[in-house]
Image 1: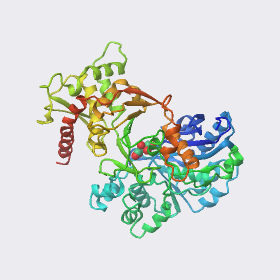
Image 2: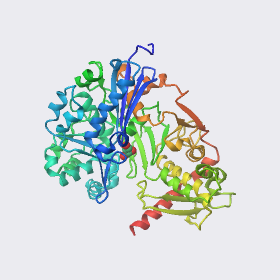
Image 3: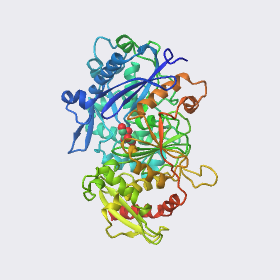
Image 4: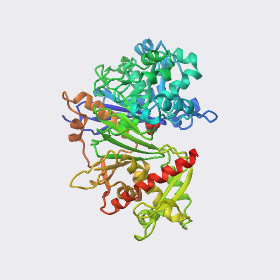
Amino acid sequence: MADDDGPLYLGFDLSTQQLKAIVVNSNLKTVVQAKVDFDGDFARRYGIHKGVHVREETGEVFAPVAMWLESVDLVLDRLYRNTPVSLSRICGISGSGQQHGSVYWNDQAPKLLGSLTPDRSLASQLSAALAHEWSPNWQDQSTQKECDAFDAELGDREKLAEATGSGAHHRFTGPQIMRLRKALPQMYASTSRISLVSSFLASVLLGSIAPLDIGDVCGMNLWDVPNQRYSPALLALAGGTEGAEDLRSKLGEPQVDGGAPLGRISEYFVRRYGFSPRCQIVPFTGDNPATILALPLRPLDAIVSLGTSTTFLMNTPRYKPDGSYHFFNHPTNKGHYMFMLCYKNGGLAREKVRDALPPTGGTADWQAFNEAVLTTPPLGMVNDEDKAKLGLYFYLRETVPNIRAGTWRFHCDADGSNLQEAPAWPREVDPRIIVESQALSMRLRARKLVHSPRNDLPAQPRRIYLVGGGSLNPAIARVIGDVLGGVDGVYKLDVGGNACALGGAYKALWALEREPGQTFDQVIAPRWKEEGSIERVDRGYREGTYEQYGSVLGAFGQMEKTLLAAETD
Ligand code: XUL
């Protein structure tokens, strides 16, 4: 199909701070993109900062839903004005939303969604469809009591993780719903449907309430993953003893096939922006599940996202839940899962270590940090008799594992024995130790999911893809390769901040161009060109070095356990 007359696909990403839209053609080439920046475009009107309101006293973090509605009109307006092609060529739309956030619709919603007039804005017509003007955000921390109840409901935290793929987390939608039901009983009673941010955006485009997505439904602590149904006990916990069925109908059943179109686009968008009336809306998913759709990510490949926080993502057929990490249904591959580690102490923690380095007399900050990383030997061991240095650098309470803020330095023998608190070491050693520590934590937790990629090599990922700000740092790429391996190399993914929106656009393409039974990978992989999409930044697995880190992995876990135990004493 020629690039200039074939079908186009649109992917959205409704994240905390922006709404992005990206249009690709059947060859995965980006045709046009547009974005709305909430602070830049709306800070004055909505009084938000970094896209949200924060109520320090309660730990609540929430966003105005009307602002998102305004953003949909604004981003389409920008797309419409800038596009070199007609939006009528767009055959399918999908996308992503920040995970865990929820939107509360009242009983007017179906009527209002279905009768939008193109000469008035979405916000002016749909604000009346909301039971609650706010959407709780994933940064919210107001639900400790509810999390304790979730962790206890099925026995303990590990049992909850076995059932729902995750232990209870403040941001997860089940604990959030439980809190809102008690805090705002009238609002909850007047809610007829609850959407996740992903299905909210799909609903607006569809002109009716869209079902939840099969990947995103796992970010609630309500979906029983092994049995693929809502957990009646957890529905009753969140919705109230008599309210389990009511909550089930508020949520609705998710759509199992992430590639089955939900229906045609609402007439509002046809008349206002020139979309084709045949354009299909495909289920939207969470931003993390959408990230793994931005490239053909095979089992044994991993994505490390190095932003303010750090996330580690894998596509795996193995379901091995644990209270400190997450399993979600894979958004497109039935029977596969997305494994996710989500660390709070990522880029900011590295920055603090950088800022504590002795002044260098003019050397750029990261240059000094990187030099320190690259001139310090693995584990700070100059020779075999040296102690291996291990540290934890948490500027915020961490979730993986749940350890308080603080800095700890330990050491052990090369074989991992004799772990002890270490005497202070020079500050120039810290840059390597913090990056190693972040990578060791990922290796420790991903080890149940990896196996030997080939020829008796030790178990490790095949390829590691880096995204986010930290992916530009060669010293970090080197340590990731040293510690995590990656027999086929470490790569930087060159999609800027657009991975989730791109994943959404590819999902729409897959949904509409797949032959019966064709998987996402079978459709996307042959069209995906490495050139221009990825760049190899480290060779990955180094024999000897990888094994050296393997010897201290147990000691690293022991260090975490020691600190956890000290906290509960
Ligand atoms: C994941 C999470 C964040 C948000 C960011 O569990 O809460 O990564 O998805 O939008």
